[in-house]
Amino acid sequence: MNGVCLSGIFGEDINSIRKLYFDFAIVCIMRKYSIKDWAKDDQPRHKLIQKGTHALSNAELLAILINTGTRRESAVSIAQQLLAASGNDLQKLAGLSPKEMVRLKIKGLGEAKAIGIAASLELGVRRNAALFKKEKIGSSRDAAGYLQATLQYLQREVFAVLFLNRANKIVHFEIISEGGITGTVADPRIILKKALENNATAVILCHNHPSGNLQPSSADEILTKKIKTAASFLDILVTDHIIVSREGYFSFSDEGLL
Image (tube, rainbow, N blue to C red; front, side, top):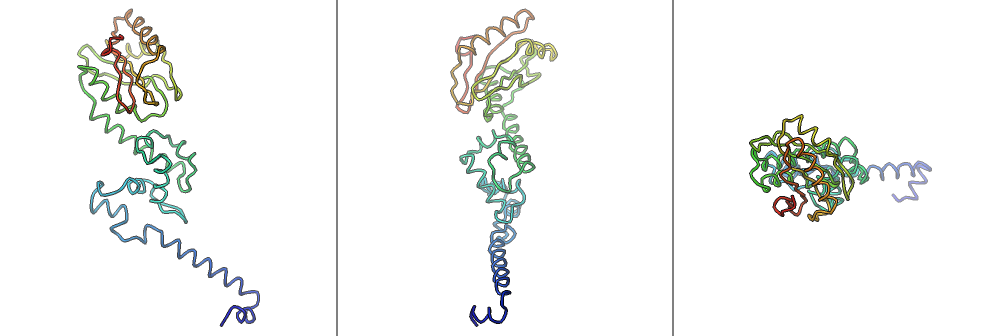
């Protein structure tokens, strides 16, 4: 029975029947891409339980955080789009805020999911930083390892301080100010106030360079001298100023600039 005969029998209803058939076909096609329809060994959660986290791709790990997809995209597909938007660079992804992720306008990635991803990535950053944290700072390398692990992923420049006691043990770490992509400023009064509050006898200044360039600017050198001079009146030592990026670190002390 062809379409003409059907039209004769059903009249205008044939268009409705065709539409229903078309919609049903679309649903079937969409179902094909649902993670629930995948082989169990390919489903991210099942794969993680059976084979461990190391067996999953970056997209599959992100898909577990994303949890659910949309009618047209699986969670893995959304994860792949997020990775692609970050240049498939996990370090760059770790530097994105939830708002920046949402602004990528990836369907299925709203604020709630972006917050979950950002929180999980921040835990990874902190875990990595903890591996480098030394109880006692004996050299610029000891401080730089921790500072680089903590700040290297940030897309904006920040000014931070490590506060030390007489035994050169870290008593406090704090980001003092945040700026833009090209720079930030730090108020010596705030730094010294924090030092007194934490009974610190020495401080290590630090800021990151998102551009990757580790060379200090003339403004960096002037600020360092200004803070060092102000600290001396309170018998607080400025033992170093360290610039960090994904490329490494630069120590004012090692380079004789302090």
